[in-house]
Length: 129
Image: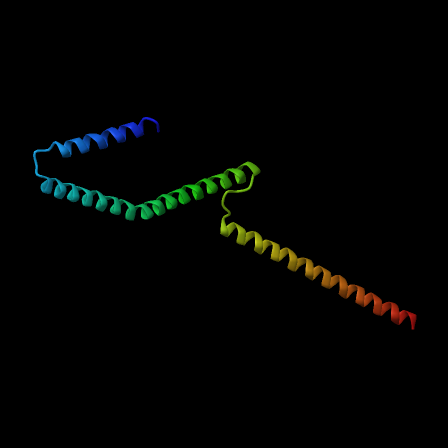
């Protein structure tokens, strides 16, 4: 930063000297300086107007890269722990259906056992009478 200050100062002094020693009249020089100052101001305004859009674009790109990084990290963790990176929905449906069938079979066995206990209880009551 210490080298930029003297450079800018030298450039400003050189520009001022060039304006003062120019062969144009003062009126022409002032018009020229005003024209250039307006052009620079317009360019600065255009740059400033484009900056928020550029910042938003940069944020979106960074966000997308971050999401990609997170997704990759999650996939590596799942792979390291032995979990599949993605679950096949058809495979999942088959597993759910198999579990439903096992539960239904267990409910039927329990119902039959309960019926047998009920019949045995009735037989014991009849025998006791």
